[in-house]
Amino acid sequence: MVDRESRIAAAHESTFRCVFRDSEFRHHEESRVVKWSGLREWLESEDQLYWITRKAGSRKSTWMKYLCGPVASPTATQREDAQTPGDDKSAGKWYSRCRPCIEKWASGLGFMEQNGLYRTLLHQIISQRRDILSKLAPKQWESICLFDHRPRHWPTQDLLEMLFRAASIIRADSKLCLFIDGLDEFEGSPEDPIQLTREMIGDGVNIKVCLANRHWNIFQEAFEQKPNLRLEDLTFHDIKSFAQSQFHANADFENLQ
Image (cartoon, rainbow, N blue to C red; front, side):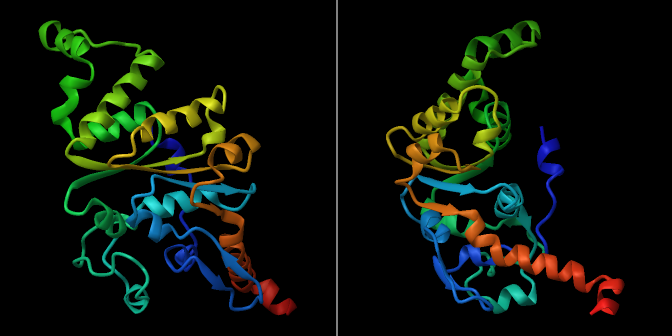
């Protein structure tokens, strides 16, 4: 289940940090100004959908892993950067980089933040809320309890119904934040994850979804009116910084210079 995520490289040092800053900034070495819908503002707001699109090679999966991945207690550099969320957490505690912003949105309610789709979403949700398991698939649960009969195959439609039921139960007393990477990489029609997203959002109460995919027209038509980010604009300087660091770490290149 975690094989694909585990193969995504970790973010290079000092990259991606501007994502939590204001939604407009000027690169130090370039004259151009980059604008996007502020991620911090979206995480803290009641807006439900944030759409990330990108060109191939702009490090979308690395960025999503950075966003959702755990971070330890803040480093000295992070403490100096007052705009990096989560700097007030206790030493040694691990938490998602998005957690401080999502906590503001949750406003005292419990919340869950996840990534993946169908089985992975269900697995992650149930891992945090085991009390709802018997309510998601009551017939299968009864069969397991009475006869120890465990289904070998779960039809896609059953999984979807369980997922919607889980979201409905959780939203009654908590808030749910989903991070879904690679909508363009799933089997089947692109309409399927688009429809899933629309149905998950539903009536707009206690749920928000952050999506990432390549810049396909079908996704643009569905999500372009929502808060969004074109990742190649944000990562241009990070890619340049990484390339330069690789050159300068090479002794032959230094001699050539």
